[in-house]
Image (cartoon, rainbow, N blue to C red; front, side):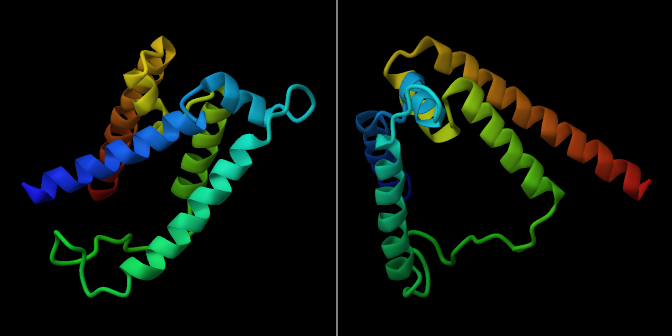
Length: 144
């Protein structure tokens, strides 16, 4: 039960912070990117605060031998900067700049009744499925 309850609680806390900060509002996010027009720098403070909390959190958490509800940390096996990382980062940035939604902000926006968030989340899920399908097809061709 704790394995589900605590992540759900922290997810709710994260989503509430996203909603309160305005990062679930695509107009506010797009204004953050509009340097030549209606630039709104307030999200820079939200991001700086999130980075500070994350930096402190990582320092505290990684002092432990294992997480509270798992037997080990699940960390990426590689720290290489490769085409997949660069391509995914570029797609993330392009999508965020065009729509005003990032994955972390789109889910709370769904809860706030933002209709465009439904389109964004559906497109994001379709993109994930397409990427997995293409990756499997490429792996099959390599091994065949």
